[in-house]
Image 1 (cartoon, one colour):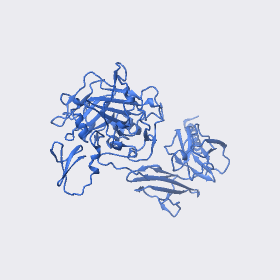
Image 2: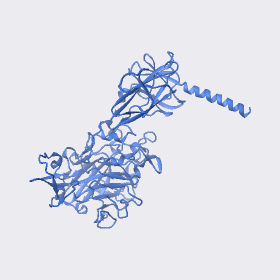
Image 3: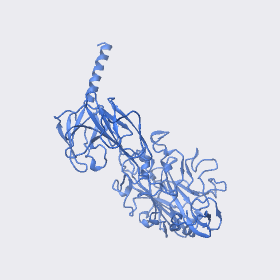
Image 4: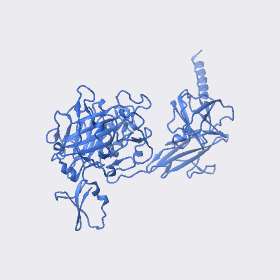
Length: 581
């Protein structure tokens, strides 16, 4: 056979295969589920993005879907309501490849079983023109959203935005549409043969919670919840060194040391960069809650880390501890606010941030005046406290850098504190970080893995090292924030600060499958949870009737022109009041 003839034969064969793939159609019996419109989601190769795509109505309770390409790699599928999400609006998974021409039926109820009813012999599926929207239906937005439509095959797209059914008298799509409020976009296409198809696309404006005075408080993010500011008590911490192991030093009785009375901050799970991009990465550094106490000698801290991000599409949930923070030589970072009259960025004289040799990564502009850096393997390296000097920078030399000697002062334990009854987080991976500023989409993840799969760290920090006293903590309080790092940059923190999500969906320069948060510059501006002090004296709770400009003074009587936050005397006219800003 000559080459020209071979080319013709191959062309005809490929054309035949293409037509065959385009004619791969399955049907769905909607009689039990009773949805107004039906969609399909499938995975393998090819696959749809959640929440899938809307399928065509054939007749009565019968709907159909023609795959746009050969679905031989599809390994599973489910049917769902075309626009609504939730277990009550979808079937269970059909964990096998679809069969061309077959009718599938969904049982009623939450995630009802899908059954294969065999070859469909009713009215054949119509040849319709399908509209594709970008962003896809179900997208949420904070301020506004712009939607682009295309039709395949190319025909005019009639549409409405008021929820009414479009007709040939409706507006014709000509350019991208911008919405500033929650909108149901409905479309109508008509093929050259006169076959009509309507579709619905829903775009929802988020009900975001605005931060107040540098603190985000939602139903799930809580800073000093119910006025809790730690406990004035001694915590009987016990640390044991384990040289030449991964964890190095254990906190032996950590699981019995803390209760809800010590809680100073409640975060959420899955609020780290790898939940948006790079969930295949281990270990997982995801702080969830901070506990605090103090006595005449020490500041006691406990931080609960949770295991809520895993390689859902690959290796699944780790069963060999590789997800543990102590499985790598990573860094743990605590940012303190010890003195209301001091603040620094955590930058060295050479312009780099601490422990960084090539630039700035984690920069503090939130009242931080002390930073502790240590290894996720307790006692490894030289953990230290860093303080600002007269130039506003810090160094690796005393008195800027304060180390702790050879005795262990922090350690790690496996498990979840008994007082933690819920682990709140977004239901799905890959969500928009803006969802964290809402009360939507959160579910309890506590049953996803065993309680022993989580990790807890605790610290006993001498007050003499911090340069503070018990009375100072009682009177004015101190602040502490936990920074989650992977690589050099922050990937999350407790409490919430939006800076750790500003590049969450951008590709890391060394690996496009993971997040640029590992290497970007994060500038922290949100405030710390407080330990000690009198939170009932917050400035927000003071009724101000005198409009005279306020003046602020430290407890020692020094006037402060631009107070940040801490304990102050506020003088307005002839009245002086003690306040915490």
